[in-house]
Length: 377
Image (cartoon, rainbow, N blue to C red):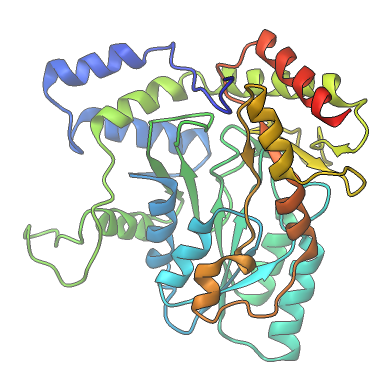
């Protein structure tokens, strides 16, 4: 089986991990934590970084740090991982959903503008507090209109940049927009720590708030005394050591992913019945976090069937996101009843991605594309 993802761990990972073992610094206290936070935040053009246990917990802490809570609303895409909506719902707030752009697969900015105009101007909705932006699969959201809308309506911006490490928007690093930006270091990301995440910000007050929430909200002057509840979201020194080794090679990883994406496009572009990812937009060149395929309507199979056929041929795949408005858990809460977002629904039903990990070889890519051609003939 060619796996859908295999990380590349052939830099200084072993050296730095041995240093942790030799010195005994294996917990959430250790020199690699601050080094990783400082190096990563500088890389994305931020003043502060707060390392946490995952991208999901980064979102949880970010929502809490911004004071979003009961009765508030946050606008976000329906086509994303459930972590984004879960952070909002757990805080007692409500997600307001936006459909996808059919070409970039990101949040449709035109619909965002229309929804905000309708909710705030026409209905007088003063419950909306923030826009959560999620960059999807390697292409960034068009951020200028988002920032303009946020400024116009006095909204905060939470940027989920988990899938665009090393990407830029008009030359500016993704992760440098809004009040807080969140990253994931899951094994399929351009930087991995196994599990792990990062919050970055330019606001010193928010940075301190996130650090407190990450560390059980211990009072600064007396440990084990608490005035509010936080979480244990601390990253270990072992994870940070791997993260530093990965950060050292981020440019190499991004360049490798772009070569892989262009190779896949060259091999697959003549196949009828599939939509391939855009190679670029007016504001960014794709970094192909994953290489997605969307089956066109005249292709007589679903993504699930295509994935099953590929699995029989030894090719690992993974489905596209299942939209938030179709999630049973939210329906049980009374959310998103009778809401429909047709582009996201089509992407979910017809889309999947093929092996895209950094360790994938050119020979494996050739095999993958041959198997894709076989099932689509």
